[in-house]
Length: 196
Image 1: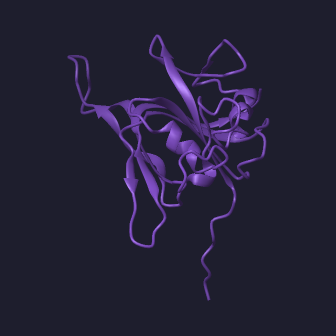
Image 2 (image 1 turned 90 degrees about the vertical axis):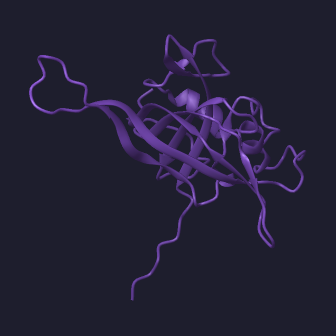
């Protein structure tokens, strides 16, 4: 008889604040005045956010580790990429060129009954996604518990997205949630292996 595999504690999801310099997404690193570009994440940067799990944690107003607040119905995955079939006088045959990566980034977060509780892991994502048009790099790691430090050889995936209006959810005999459908910005760093 087949058995269903249960989800284990083997994911890490970080919301890392982002901004652009000359159109290139950068990750904000509280311990350094120098930003970290999307294509060159560092172990130190990731570890600065792995330990930030509640609003009481240092630098929680920047970003943090929202793993334990994410409901297991989330969708962080590729969808059909945008292409262009524009041709020039020198084009041969029909061709399409990849223009942007498309991906879905949809998460439902559990909410705490007391939104002022600074020790609640459920209040961290509520604070971080409470406004639209906030830029984040969503960092995702599979295969390690959420509190394991980032280290050399680990594979991470990075998605550049902005927040939209978060939608509160509640129902009879259900936990309260906050639904966030991030706005993908078409830039990713997929299957990046950490070295430094």
